[in-house]
Amino acid sequence: MKDINILKTEILSNNWYTLKKITFKATDNTGVTITQEREAYDRGNGSTILLYNKKQSSVILTKQFRLPTYINGNETGMLIECCAGLLDNDNPEECIRRETEEETGYKITDVKKVFEAYMSPGSVTEILHFFIAEYTNDMKVNDGGGAIDENENIEVLEMPLADAMNKIKTGEIKDAKTIMLLQYAQLNNLVV
Image (cartoon, one colour):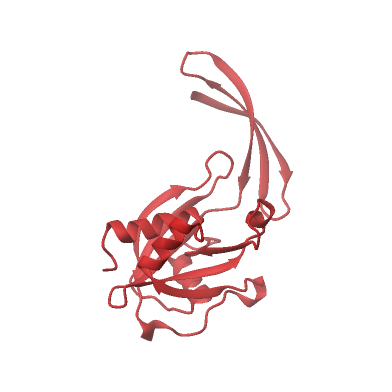
C-alpha cells in the first residue's frame, strides 16, 4: 500500500481507551486505488521487562487475571507474564522502572532495552518496548503485587529459567511478550 490518505476518523468508543473507525484511500501493489475501513484500538504504548538472576539461574514473572483471555477460553483468566505497563506520560525506561517496583517489589538499577515490537498490528496501535535487567535479592524493597488503587492483585513468581521455558511447552505461559523475552534470555545465555 502507498499514497495512503485518511478520509475520515470516527470515535466508536472512548470509554477505557479509544476505538476508532478509519476510512482511508490507498494505492495497492497493482496500482489500483482502493477505499477501505478499519478499526484501530489505541491504548497507548507500553514497556515490558524480564528480570533475571545469573547466579540463581532464575527469572521473575507475574501472575494476574486478564479478562480478555477469560472471555476467549482461558478457564481461570490467570496469565503468567513478564512485568509490563503502559507508558502514560513516562519514557519507556522510566515506565518500566516504576512498573517493576510496583508489580514485583524490586528496585532495579541497570536496565537494557533489547527491542521493540507491535503486538497485535492488525487492530491495536500499541508498540511495546522490551527490556531486561539483572536482579539480586537485595534489590527487593517491597512485596510488589501492583498498584493498590488499580486493583491489580499481582502474584510475584520467581522460578528457574528452565521451568519458565517448560511452561511455554506445556501451555502454562501463553503471553507473547513473555515468550519473546524468555526466548531472548535463553538465546543470549542470560541465565546459565
